[in-house]
Length: 195
Image 1 (cartoon, rainbow, N blue to C red):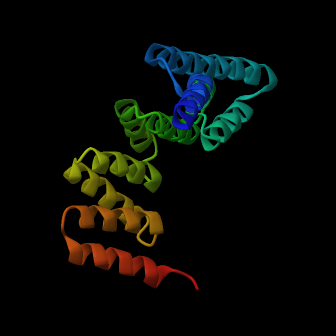
Image 2: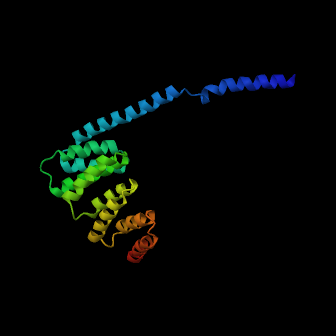
Image 3: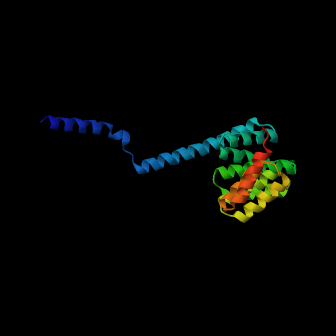
């Protein structure tokens, strides 16, 4: 009968810890929804309070880039939108804000919005290789290799020794099985690197 008392004891322990491991799928969905809603509310509050403390567009833009770097793309997008409302922005300023907002959209997986902003970057700042490179990264992820190659070739003309251009070009060549060209791009990074 010892085994019966062990089983009863084990069942008692199991019953006492079951609430720790048991979960209701609906409860989990509600918990996830509440977390997302809370994050969105915090983003809105941060944007509104950040706007109250920021007195000029450059401060708002700085806060937007900082939020993006901290991994807060919703906050960043709100701040970028606020900064871009300034009608006195130069082409360069507007282009750089679009670049920041486009990368924040990309962080959220909103590729079409990101591409729209990056198209604006390329239109406003045709000599800025970053717009072409970042857009090519999205094209590559979407398997739109010809668009990616066109953008990376343009970026390479603008910045022939830039490591990010050469790295992304090498990655694109590797992904499309043009291994000799990939190796050549990677070798150029090494040969341009300052030791």
